[in-house]
Length: 187
Image (cartoon, rainbow, N blue to C red; front, side, top):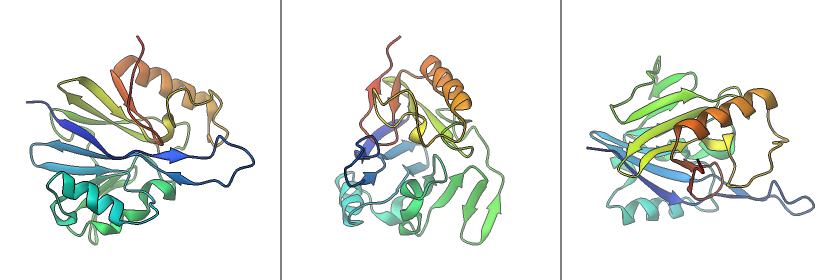
């Protein structure tokens, strides 16, 4: 059986609108597979109730979520990790649960795999999820949104980012970018 992916909160950014007040929110995604009830990038929100209500629509509470996945170490993607009292946090440096830490494994289930996708940030990770629709790449700011400018002015390493983008476009059928809704990869 394939995993399920659902966008809980569609992200947005004003980073590509010079001269305007910058506001941002990452795309917050729910991934379910076997025992995993995972929230990806719980980020920043105008009000945490937005995420609580989105989970409630899926029949879930904060306590039901057992895993948080962080695509990269920019605070707009991870600020709300503390909302989930029973969740371990998976990020670039390892897996954290309460005061314990251990090395992360990249194959979480037969349907969920982590790959490193540096460039925007050296800690960038992408979650590859096999679903009934195909492979969905939840990639944080490797892609901010569909048709985002090719040059990412916030990228730590533009050449590595170009390589990461190329790799994801070859692997994925769909992309869930860092700050917008899911889109189909044009092949």
